[in-house]
Length: 324
Image 1 (cartoon, helix red, strand yellow):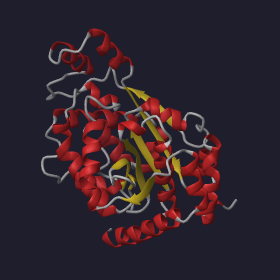
Image 2 (cartoon, rainbow, N blue to C red):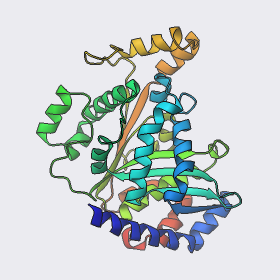
Image 3 (cartoon, rainbow, N blue to C red):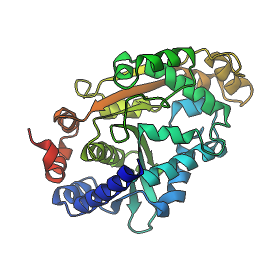
């Protein structure tokens, strides 16, 4: 795995240089009024910027509905995200968008190999937060709700384990090697860039990077389904997806909260949110599961179908996999 990570780092650095010199890419940035930014591969220099963005965006003040449900604080987020960012730096596949005037990171997209999730188990107390325990159970149920995806990545023994132990997620992919399946979907933006096209550009970089590194597929469980559906809503033929409603989910014995009903009750009685806000959170308690097969031109044609201004960038920067 380490040898392939080193190779991926070199390939991604080369890709970043190619992008910087691409007329189509620079014209696109100018067209989107984002030419004051430069895009680079995540490194140690960006660690604290990215960690701060992640901990805030995935807190009670962010737009990830599962984190909002559990009133997650930035303090609770820190241990797990600190480990994930370090793993992303080691993998060398993630991108940052940096303001050229200040050198502040204003956007970030996290990419990692599905097998790297094994290392998250050994992080210093990464699942100390009760929310993080319950989130894994939500995600496990979400994966089971899309059988075609689970058939692609799990063998029968693991699917049985998932049914018996909802907390198991990502950790046992028998027969899958490093460099085959990626996990994408985490895009974090500074507040002033939320309404611009930066998230779409970072999403494009994330997907094209996996294809550039010869991954065969990628998938995500996205906790901001509204924004994600804006990205993939018109591409269902190319990128199958499903919305999973976890508002009625019940949790196994041993958890403080027996069901999501207990979670919503705590939001009102313990944390003081209004009943109207809790009802809103409950109505929107969904995650989106989607996957992409990178072999063949279908995936990038689907992306270019929704965002036609990306087509020239893809064709100019990635000619080897855009040939029909």
